[in-house]
Length: 171
Image 1 (tube, rainbow, N blue to C red):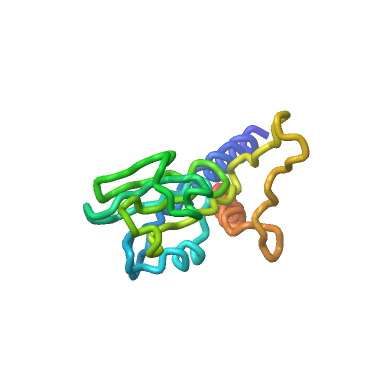
Image 2: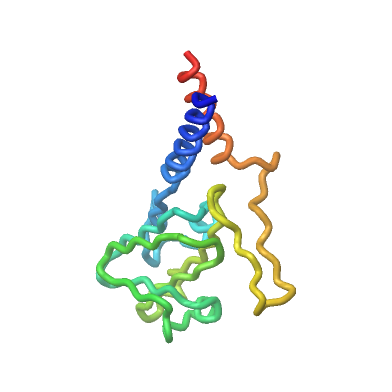
C-alpha cells in the first residue's frame, strides 16, 4: 500500500512538472517575421495556439514599442490609456490567465498598417477555469478548448509519461 501511495505522489509531481515544461514561448511573427509593419501579424496570431503559462516574446527595433490596450482601442488603433507600455526591443509578456488580450505598436501609423495582434489565451489542462462572479449574473465560464476526442494533447502526454514512470518503477 505504501508503494502505491508513493507511486501516486510521484505520478502527481511528475504531471505537475511536465505540465510546466509544456509552456511555450511564442516569438511574435516568427519564424519568418517579427514585431514590425512588414509581417502579417494577424495571420501569425491566428496560426498560433496560446495557453495559460505561455509567453509572448516581442523582438523589435527602437522605432517600435508594444502597448497592451483594450479591445476598443485595438479596434480603433487608439494609443490613449494603454493598460501596459513596453519599450526596449525585447519584451516578454506572460499569458497568466485565459481570455483575450490586445497589443498594438504605439508609433504613429504602425497599428493602422497592421502592427497589432489579438491573443486568445485558452486555459491549460492544469489551470482552473474562471467562475462567474456574483456581480455578473447570467455569465458563464468559457467553454473548454475543442478537441476531436475531448482529451487535450497535454493530458495525453502527461498520462503517457506517468504510465512510463510507473512501468519503470514496477521493474
